[in-house]
Amino acid sequence: MGGVEDDEPASKRVKLACGELKGNPNGSLLSEPSVGSSRDLMARLLQSEDDEEVIGSKGVIKKVEFVQIIVKALYSLGYKKSGAHLEEESGIPLHSSAVNMFMNQILDGNWGGSVVTLRSIGLKDESTIKSASFLILEQKFFELLDAEKVMDALKTLRTEIAPLCASSNQLRELSSNLVSLSQGPSAGSSNQANLRAKSRPKLLQELQELLPPTVMVPERRLEQLVEQALTLQRDACVFHNSLDREMSLYTDHKCGRDQIPSKTLQILEAHSDEVWFLKFSHNGKYLASSSNDRSAIIWEVSANGEVSLKHKLSGHHKPVSSVSWSSDDHKLLTCGVEESVRCWDVASGECLHVYEKAGVGLVSCGWSPDGKWIFSGVNDRSISVWGLDGKEIECWKGQRTLRISDLEITSDGKEIMSISKETAILILDREAKSERVIEEDQTITSFSLSRDNRYLLVNLVGQEIHLWNIDGDINLVAKYKGHKRTRFVIKSCFGGSEQAFIASGSEDSQVYIWHRGSGELIGTLPGHSGSVNCVSWNPVNPHMLASASDDGTIRIWGLNSHLQQQKKQQQVHSNGGSIAAACNGRT
Image (cartoon, rainbow, N blue to C red; front, side):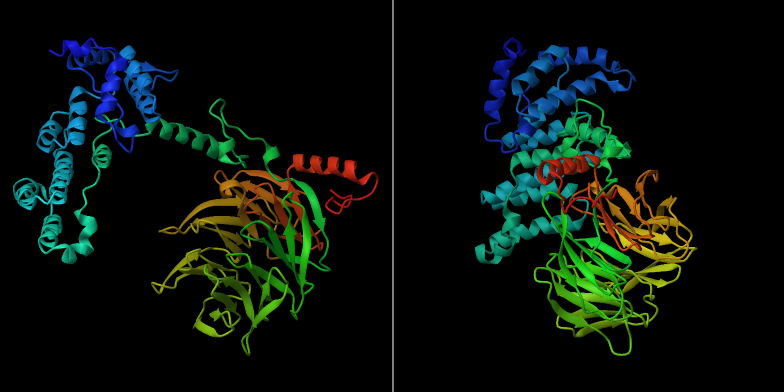
C-alpha cells in the first residue's frame, strides 16, 4: 500500500506537493510536502523512540519538537527541499499523515472529508472540534453563495452549520447573507463584503491558530523563540542603549557603560540666570529651555549633534517656568510663573499669541495632540482649554491643579494629568468625564508621562522617584533613590532606547541615571556647579542628554566616542584656534 510513492526520492515528493499547492499566496503556511503512509508509519515508530529524547546542556529541549520547529522554519523560508530532506533524514515528520490529509482536503474544498478527518488528528477537546468544524462549514457556505448555489447554501446552513452554532446570533448573521442575496445586488450591496468567502489558505491559517501546537506546528515559531531570547537578553542588560538591529545571534548580548551618555560635549551659556526647565522636541531636532531670566531659548540640533542657538524668546514679565512642544514641533508654548502662556513660531521666533486670564495667573501649559487647542493650569486650581485664537473653550473648576503643577496630556488627547493636591495626581478622562487619582504619602514636586502613555514618573519631596503604571488599574511599579532634594523642584525624565532609563537632576549638582527595569543606579554625571533642576533625553538620539542648572548653563551629554571624535575634528580644523561646538575648555 503506497509503496511506489514511498520509493520516490524526497525531491520528487516536494515537486509534486508544490504543484498541488500552486498559487498559495501565503507560501510558507502550505509548503510542507505530504508524507506517504508507509514512510509515515516508520517515522512514527522512530519518533516514538525519540519522544523522550532531549538535547542541550540543560536537558529541557525535546528533540522531536526541536526538529519539527526547524523543519517548519525551513518551509517558511522557502527551503522546501531542505525541509523535506530533514524530515526524511531525522525520521521525524512535521505533521502526521492525518494532518497532511486534512490540510490537502481544506485546500481542495473537500469540506465533508475534512470535517471527518478533523476527528482523527488527535484533538481531545470537543469544543475545539466544534469551532474548527464551524469555520470549515462556514467557508463551504460562503463559497456556495459566491457560486450562487443558494439552495445548497441553505441546506448547509440548516443541516450542518445550525447544530454547531453556539448562539442564535451566529445563525442569524449567516442567514442575513441569504436574504441579502435573494433580494438582489442593490439590497445586498451593504453586505457585499459578507458574501465573499476567504481564501482557502487563509482558512487553513485560522484553523492552525485554533488547533493545538502539538497537532499543527505554529507559523514562525522558531523566529518567535529567537526574538524572545534576544528580548530577554536586551532587557537584562542594564546598559542597553542601542538599536535592536545591532544585536547579533552569534554572541550573547551585553552592552558596556560606554553606551550611556556621560561625557560633556557642550556647555550652553546663553541664559543670564538659573535655567529651570528644558525639553527636546519630538523629532529631536530642537531643544527649548526656560529660565529665571524671563526668557526662553530655542536651540537647534544639527545632524552631527552640535547644538546652537536659534531664537531667544523675550516678552514674559516673570520667570519662565516651563515649555511645551506642539506635536509637529512647529510651535512652542512658554509659561511664565503665575503669568501668561505665549505661543511661538519655531521657524521665525515670532510670538503668535498670548493666552491670559483676568485676575488669575497661568501655571502650566500643554498641547492637544492635533494642535488645535492648548491646556493650561490656573492658580485658582482650575484647568482651562483654549483655542488657538485665544478664546477659552472650556474650564474645569475645583481642585484640579496646584501652583507648582506639571500638566500632561496623553497622545490621544483623552486624559489630562495634573497635581490636584500636594500628595495626589488627578487623571481626568475628558470623554468619559471620569477621574482617577494617584495617592502618594509624600508631597509631589513634579511628574512626567512616558511616551507610550502607560507610566507616570513622580518626583517626591522625600528624595524618591516613583514609577506608576496607569494603564488600567493604577499600581506602583518601581522606586528610584540616590539623588539629593531638600529645597527645590527637581524634574526627572524617561529616556534612552525604548525609554529604558530614568534620569533626574539633583541638588548636589549631578545628573543621576537609573536602569528603569531593575532600579539600579548606573551613573552619576558631575560637571555643574549648581543644583540640576531638569533633564531631558533626546527622543530620537538615545546617546544625547541635556541638563539645566542653577549655574545658568545647559550641558549636553554624549558618549565618550563622540567626545573623542570632536577632539580629533578640533585638532584637524582649528590648528590652535577654537571650535564653537567644543566644551569651551571645560569638562
